[in-house]
Length: 427
Image (cartoon, one colour):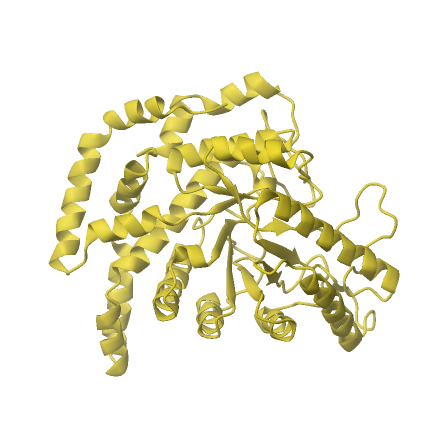
């Protein structure tokens, strides 16, 4: 299914008058503060968020998964779904594949399909956190850290195979999330686990093409609960420093212990030039993988404050980092959920862009805590939706992506094409 541009334009016509009034009002407000609204719109237009191939089907919990209707049953159908998202918001211009869930059997055909939808391929993701059908050796007790060198070799070979698929599609990065660890004291030797993992990562690193990066992700717990080999940003950074300049730290918002100061982690990684990018989601208790911005929008804003400052300091634009959604939802239409997540990301980015950073630095220099808080909260409480809508409009997207999705009955169309009882590949 493909959404034609004329359908988007027709839908926008009915919303344009109201939108223009809201945008002009906000533009004047920002102008009084010396902020160029049009410049912010252009910055938002350049921001692209990768959609993971596994997020296009209904997610779930360890207790159950309630598959939705019209789910994509092949890689081609997943790419078509991302094409729908990108047509609606013009900010979802890439797809991140998970191997072996979504192995491209005909790379040329896959590239041609993606190109026809104005999509490209972001980082490719390996999977050694579960056993696959006909897999010779099990990862039950670890993969890159396993005590058995044969298991480690199998895991290394898989990652190198993933690089091969990525090269065929034009990807430029390998993302590694390692679930290795232990559930009980005494189960693992911490030092040997670290050393085994480092040696395995070094083999993978050596196989990277010259213009590639490897993103090393961390997680405090789950599926192992006593220890994980790469348990926090510090251990991930340590691995990256030992590997070399082509290795950077990937931050997943859900991969922290409760109340962790993620914005401080981001600031430190950017200061060191070691931030690869983000897996965006939200959580109430742990790694809940909820819709971005649905629980802690102020935290997301504060993270973007550090991102904007870090990008200015490094002289980089948003295209210098990897941005991806990593959510798993059991009760929402996956496409509607992804539309909400992308909008939440853009809103937080826009709020951070309108922050008066010069005044904030003056307040900090004078230890004016009240003014510093006031500046942050004024930016956060500003309704920047007209900026995001204007960016989507100028890029050819919809002023109301979810509204148009529902008006066009996109899910019903997908059900008609794919069937009522379908299960997405992968999860």
